[in-house]
Image (cartoon, rainbow, N blue to C red; front, side, top):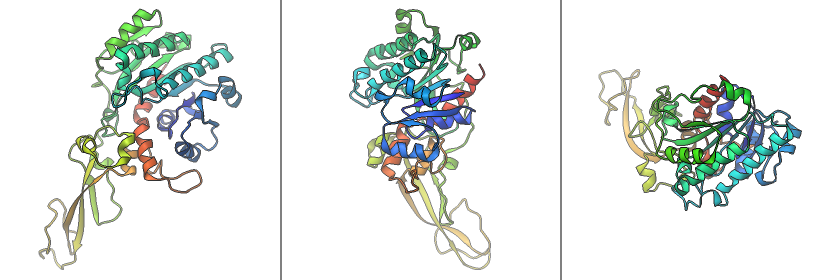
Length: 367
């Protein structure tokens, strides 16, 4: 299936969808730093920078088939951490630009494309303005032609990465053939999900209010990869392993680049690192001069010894792993130079956890 990626960031959504078998054929991202990462990893995919000037006609001139629109419009005005201006805010109001593009695509193709929309955002979108904003989101999807709309709150920690990252995903099916093939629940989580055929505004508003109370995700899967494995930073024998106090860290945020604050500590984003050395005494019975690291075995003719313990914040590489992205995905720009860590932290904090997108795509491909 061909994917139009709006508000692409550095392609976290794209990575997940492509891992499931889809193909990214157009990307739109305004941030120049994120754009250079897209050019690095998707050099042949047509791109556009300003969603407000992008048209459905232009997209179709570059790629005539758009099966899926994958997008996560800016969330700052919907997040509980912000001022919460809602969909009237300048940034989150860009949602309407995404809807405009979907409508233009449908008009240009006589309703053939897109067949599916996948919209991602912060959980705060559910209760912004008392749930009214989410009701508008569902209304707009229906008015654009969606025949089936379903949404769920999915937490990345249940999809193979040890990060507590809850996001709402709204699936809209525009294709009548696909709508008929849809099972009772598109995304099989344990608790029932509000799902409806687009009929009337009162029903959608009621559903939005209900969703604001939260949806469980106990039925989603987690491959059991533990935090220590995900955060390992061993580059030589002097650094043993990076571990954190708990199994799951808090949600990465764009503000993490600003340094370690109280919130950073509370969300368990600090790493305890053991720095070890090796004594070169002869024989297995020799006693090291420093405190022995209790969990390490003797190697050859020496002992591994603990020299110091250090506490630090997560590195950009570790943040990438917590998003399920390839190592160094945000490190190098299209010209081969390295990107500043400040940009890498922001991009991880604003991105989509790829394993979650991959799981959604697998269920959509079934229909």
